[in-house]
Amino acid sequence: MDILNLKQEFEKSIQQFKEELKGVRVGRASTQLVENLEIEYYGARAPLKQAAQISTPDAKTIMISPWNKDDLVNIEKAVNESDLNLAPNNDGAAIYLKLPPMTEERRDELVKIVGSVAEECRVNIRQKREKVLDQLNQGKKNNSISEDEFFKTKEDIQKLVDEFTKQIDQIKENKEQEIKTL
Image (cartoon, rainbow, N blue to C red; front, side, top):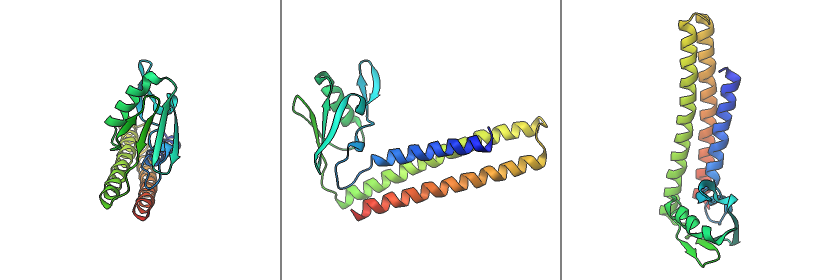
């Protein structure tokens, strides 16, 4: 794997990190909070957005209207098993999720969640780096790359990791500010 491919892999990790953070919402109800919840859908796992219409009738409520009413139970189960800490209200036609008012405790909890997701992204990047470094070490052992090329590439990889780690930290700080100020 070359540096360009590694950079693309890192960019995918950052994009996934941003997507996960979209689910961490404060203040207002957002469909992004639940649209990627995995539910049992016709014998397979699928994101909720493929099985239901998700809307926000008001600023504190998310309404989930499944295409098939038989899926209400699966949706309710997915919400209960998620880390959203929301109680689903099933009226037989749709599920309503009322977002609780933001307390200081909930803000602190969300900040911890953001930190945890950021750390997962950092670990993912470090794992990809280690995989490439293992390949690089193998190339050095096989004498397919020179000593100078080995150290230069290793240095370039570390610069790339540092650059993406800074991006993760910046995104994390921005999200934490959003949580604390709303």
